[in-house]
Image (tube, rainbow, N blue to C red; front, side, top):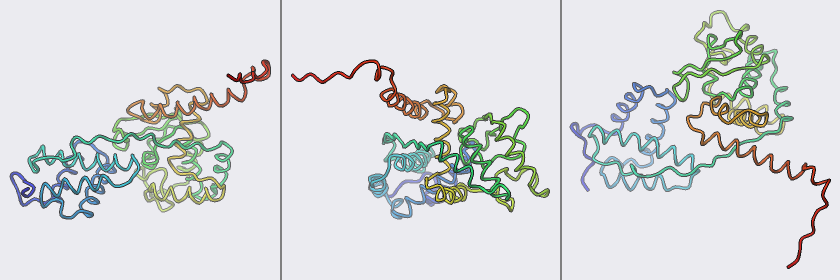
Length: 309
């Protein structure tokens, strides 16, 4: 096999092409987080297999080794999608002759839905010290996530103008939404009061562009920092809680309390019903288990002995 063929500029290496590709994706409207993920996955592969760009054979063999390692389906799918999209772009722009993984399919990922008891969630809400800015922020962010299942990244991108107190809703702007589409999420009065109080104690010089859920210094709160904060509270209550676990809790309780799968899909911002259906299935299993325990026939009809054949 010869060297990977770049047309018309053979001197361009993968790093230059990656920069050009990500810039193109940003023009198409992908989020900053998605752009960062493209960089992370492609750079990780090239770091592990630095000779991949030397020849088509190297690229193919290294990709197969990279993707054949033991990993969760979600990890495999992320690696596949980000690297495959980059290589397909290289082919489309005639920087590369062939994409070796163009026909590889994603693995089926059932995922793991986290179900936390309501008693534990009540204890969690008691942990933040709401007399401090950080504690009040944590309390309001927990309430918001349990109230409408907002994604952590989207929640931490909210600015004061996205909060509509009178209509009891928050607006997720297209530029921060994962799906790049505007969403209006309703909130309860208790959540609105907590957010209003949080906004009222902000520094006057922060301005309207500083996120609602920021650090006490007015800096952006990251998902990792928020996860660390929840880890502290988790240790106190003896139950492991993550930012996405709160989103799972909303989804399950939303369905259990009578909401339809369609409304859950819309609230969570899922583009398809596939992921949403997993929550519905779990709640259906709840019903089956409870029916076995609580059916009136348990007390009305004596149990039937098994007939030996």
